[in-house]
Amino acid sequence: MWLSVQGMIKTWADLIWMNSMELGARFGCHQRADRSFTIGHYQFPVCARCTGILISTIFTYIFYFKRRVKIEKCIWMMIPLVVDGTLQYLEICESNNRRRFTTGLLWGFGSTYIRLRLFENIFSKTKVIKR
Image 1 (cartoon, rainbow, N blue to C red):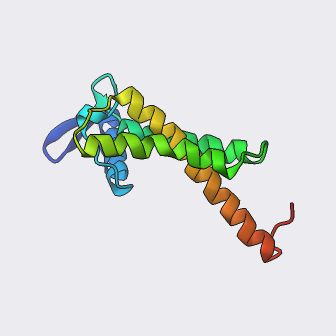
Image 2 (tube, rainbow, N blue to C red):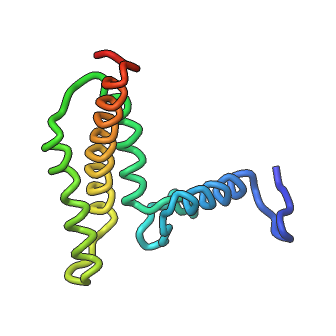
Image 3 (spheres, rainbow, N blue to C red):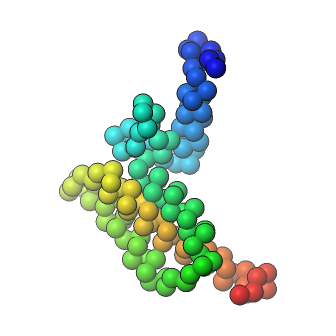
């Protein structure tokens, strides 16, 4: 199926890609092509680091109710992203997409797990949930 959008011929896949790119920008991702994965000629709607964060955030929601992790471990998991981002910002060393994705996975798990524990503690004190 072909559609004409703003004078250009686009497929449904192109329209889906354009909308997902817009959504990725709304989430705050810089979407730099050199820091993003691609499938065919389509760039991911978020960069490699944000891809890792989003994937691990989804899995953390599933994992959270199955196993307890110490908050200290979660904090340690978040440190590599801070180090990698700082080294890049200071132009000490350039990261690659594999490292960005990995640090995003670690950050996403650690930060999401801490947020879930925080919410659980808040709601358990207000007697909303009991565990």
